[in-house]
Structure formats: structure tokens, C-alpha cells
Image (cartoon, rainbow, N blue to C red; front, top):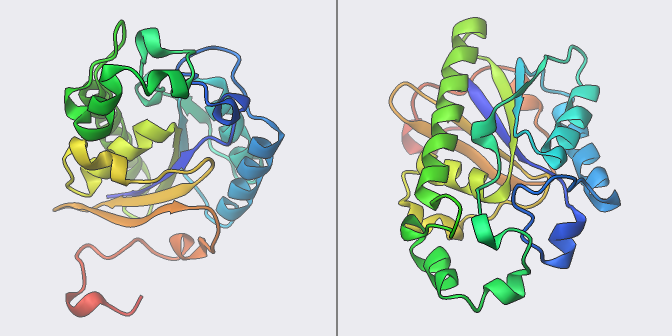
Length: 226
């Protein structure tokens, strides 16, 4: 299968203020976030990506735009609502310090598979629709461009954490153990028999190896040379 680079959007003022922005409109990157996204775009410039699929929210579209600006032959930006932020319902727009006192907070932290946000969606539902989107796009890009195809998905912290948990074979209740920093890069290759998680939550490092050849179809016995 193809290889997907999962990119979280850069920092926003809501992140700094500790506000759960959710799907609120008009939440764009702050100056630090623009710099983070620019550095990630520079890292990805050495990788000829065949596609870029983004959450519809402004902060993800901004991050996506910077990535495309650094591509020698930028693909068309595609928007997929299934990669949007979790619908936090009545929690949206409230401070994390206030929300931490809610009974649901401990459920989100310890057993998120049981968490349903009042007036919003469940975390299990978020994972289901996001994983379905990633796997569908991955299969399509491979069909169009071959097994060496590399593409980018730009989304949100909880969404990417849930995708990585699925790829790692982890129960959703363990996904809070995964870190996904602003503008970070995580890489997954969906092989014929299972996903291979190549890296998670990186904000620096050379990605040129992704331009050379597709990852091996099977994990090497003994760990391999790389």
C-alpha cells in the first residue's frame, strides 16, 4: 500500500489559552504556529507527495497551504470532513481547566472508548470515521500511483492519535499515551497484512528516505539495517 504522512496543524491562540476550540470557525494559526507549519513544510519539501487531504477547518487548511507551497509539483488540495476535529458539542469553546472538573473528563482520560460529548459525538465514532477516511484515501492513492506513493493527511491532535492507535493495534482506551504535537509528523505504511508505524510525533529530522523507495512489505527478521 501507499505511505501516509499524518501532520497536525500548527499552534493556535486557542491552544495557548487552553481553550477547546473544537470545530469553531475562525481559529487560525498564530505566529508561532505559522513558523511550526513552515518548518514542517520545509521538511516535506524533499518528498514528492502525490496527494494532500485536509480537515476543512482553517488551521488545517493553512498548514496544508504551506506544505503545498514547498512542493515542486504540488497536488490538488482535497478536503475530507471525516478528518475534521472531534465534535466536542457543549464542551466546545470552554477552558480545559474548567472542563477538567467535569465527571466526563476522567472518562476521556481513562476510558475514552466510552466517552460521548454532550451535544457532540463519541470518541469511538471519531476514530471510526477518521480511520475509514485514511484507509480509503491510502488505497486510492496506491491504485493511482503505485505502492511507492506518499501522501499527506492534515488533521487534529485527537484525530491523529486515534488513527495511530488503530495502526499500532492499540485499544482506543490507550490512545492518550500517544503524543501528537503541533505541526508534528507521524508516518504510517499500510502494508498488505498490517500497518507499519514508521515514526510518530516528530518535529525535526530528514524525510528524504521516503522519496527513495516504498517501505518493505514485511518487517525484517532481526530488525533490519535501518
